[in-house]
Length: 210
Image: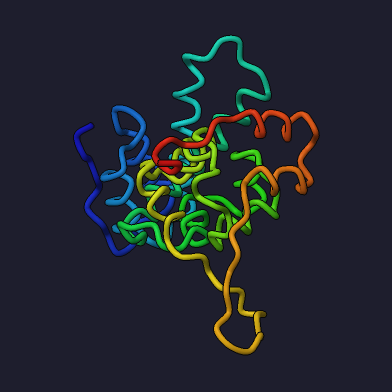
């Protein structure tokens, strides 16, 4: 899409800015959205909401039949996508902080858990790299990296980093973090039995298991 932005004025009002935004030939790409927000930072929230609704509406045109569940799913994905566009410049190229990356991708912990289909105990262990990487399922690697808009290799590099040591660990001597198998966490999780069965049937990621 060719970028089209209105020259900033000292007295631009919201309606004028949104009218110019809506005159684009189609939903905005990342460069166009970033340009509008940079020109009108006071309207950042309104521009993001407008772009979110626009992209979601455009996506729905090819979805048949349209249900409330479909609408909700597309809107949720679109909100994450738009927020990721806005935060992309703030994220480091290397994934070094999973919790921060989740927020940068437009999620809170609860929505991320639902998207990836894990519970908080598993998420906490992923954040602190307390799961044996060789036991992580390929499907988990795929859904996490997709949700974060990262490559699978970027997520693999993250889980290969040394485990984070809990700040509450006050034992004398050199503290040692212990990694556990993914299957153990699944069995002890709060996930429904059907989800536990599905995760336990998944094959480990071959690049991590090697």
